[in-house]
Length: 192
Image (cartoon, rainbow, N blue to C red; front, side, top):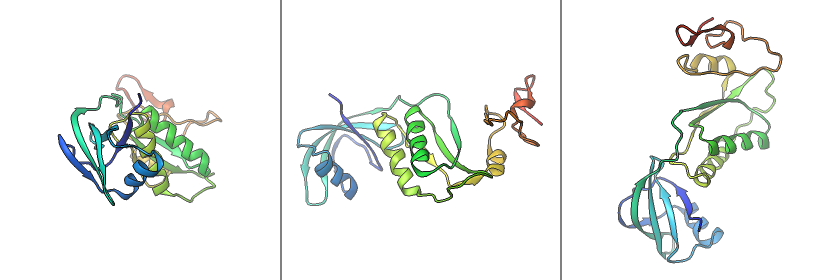
């Protein structure tokens, strides 16, 4: 049986725990219709998770009993930061969701010369990221950064890491400290 997983700002300890989050209360009681005695998993977003049983519903809280706490081992070893051009709403939301599910650690929206959509609903995207992390069994919720322009993205990307920039034309990025065409294999880094 699949257990529902929730990541939040929980202080996990063995024993009773009151959850007073209004959105979580609504999700438990009205959306998922979780019943007393059902087992759930609560994650603290710091790689800890507790298996808990729903004990009672109060007027504006849920009381659970945490039975055991363990470390989440579902995070990939490689820490990947996604720099992605901002796309129209549904497309960008899908990218954020799917990359969260496969283990991206951070998401940086990039504004390029041809970016059309500049509107940015950070609260909505953070909710999508949180739900995708819960659904895929992650131990953390990836960080969503504010949008930056392409030049700034190139500037802040770590030259000690693998950096891949895709351009359909196949042209290199001029004056780029991370240009794939200028990989100096003897030093293991990219220099232009």
